[in-house]
Image: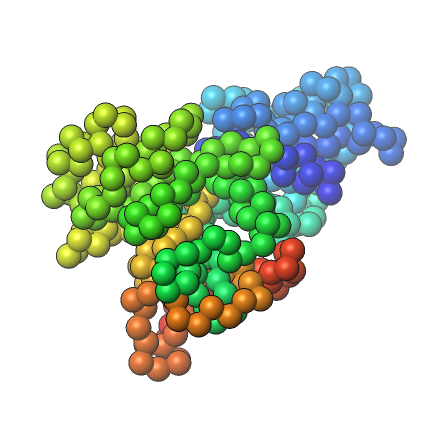
Amino acid sequence: MRRALALARARAGLTTPNPSVGCVIVRGGRIVGQGATGKGGRPHAETVAIAKASGRARGATAYVTFEPCAHTGKTPPCARSLVEAGVARVVIGCLDPYPPVRGRGVAILRRAGISVETGILEEECRRLNEGFITRVLRRRPFAILKLATSLDGRIAAAGGDSQWISSEASRAMVHRWRGECDAIIVGAGTVIADDPRLTCRARGGRDPVRVIVDGRLKTSPRSQVFTEPSSAGAILVTSMGNLSHARKRYAAQRVEVIGCPADRGQVDLKAMMKLFGERGWRKVLFEGGAHLAACALRAGIIDRVAFFVAPRIVGAGLPAIEGLATDRIRRSIQLRDVAVRRIGGDLLVEGRPIPPSR
């Protein structure tokens, strides 16, 4: 199963809208076939592994990170393919929550007399496809809020300088994350202050779609995020009232403009995420700034917080979160399932935000 996970991880971010799955077929203690989901979601991992195993799959054990599909879509059902290949046993990491598959893949295998075992390295298998699972269950992508802060919670000095708070190792990790996400999302303030490219500069990585949330159309059409060549393209999200004007303003850059409901110029982030879920996106990365971070947390759309905390004290400077006021500690946002690890000279603190008590 660890080998199947490694195969699937190598395709992380490349299989949208499908999950990234790994499959390893073992016979007589030896691997006779293995594969992972192809780019764009096809071919499926089981299909690749069965083809490589050929006749040696008969009587073998198949290790699959995600429940084999049970429905006919653009490809035949993988559970049926495993039956036809003659495998004797299937070991599954985690079940698929998608209604046409959920439990049905396992049922097909068991009806054919195949021994099935589930829940092997389940947490790791679920974590690998948390984006797909979130889109199925919540109809929106899994969202990570990433911020690089000083020890005293600043993301920039008083004059606006922010390069570089975090270490080179931390920045390299973020670029790998970008390559695994369908989109990177920032606010207008970040574009105006930093003029970022928002591309993935990890070796072998791919660019995510670059999304700029700008309810008041403050970002310049000449910003690098709009002009930097990228196969992924850029999207500007604004209010419905600004939609027509925005399409004219950014027409020369061929920027896709999306309109969402808004209140006092603030884009409805829940509505935006629902639209992204309809596109089949599985995972997105919120990278700033402080105001967008507060709005995203307030909207309850952040599934994981990831703070790179650098051993620096900035003093007067820009706060990491701006506009998320609480008058009592019990009304603050608490993190669960917290994990801390060292990345270069920084500490990476990750956790799942829990809505504050009323």
